[in-house]
Image (cartoon, rainbow, N blue to C red; front, side, top):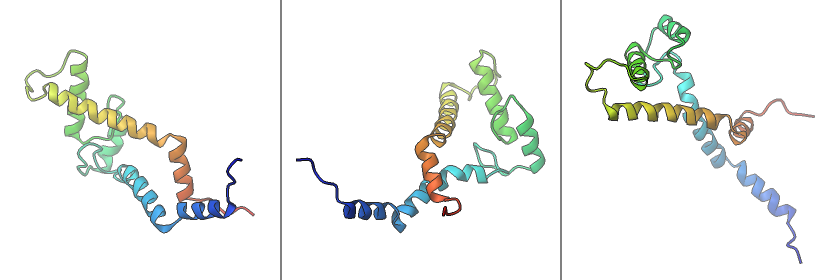
Length: 135
């Protein structure tokens, strides 16, 4: 005979999902992802503080799709140039290991963006920020 699902057990399990500890864990998971959004006046890579004018200028630069300080923007542009077979060869420290660091950083940013677009992440955000109560 099929197992009968107890309504009482279901309610108890649902209560566990909304416990203060679970809520705290959900908030911690989301907080780390949104910290980069709160750093709007900071470089996305090195977190160095930037002038508001510089941030606006960097946002308009289509060659640099991230919010970088001048130093990180120059490195990013050199990284892209090297991928295309160009780049400043005098900067010998921009070697293969340096290229891998940049590639992994870009991959990580893409992975975060993809994660934040998932249905599960959207559900988590909705649970943490419920809209007005429905009647």
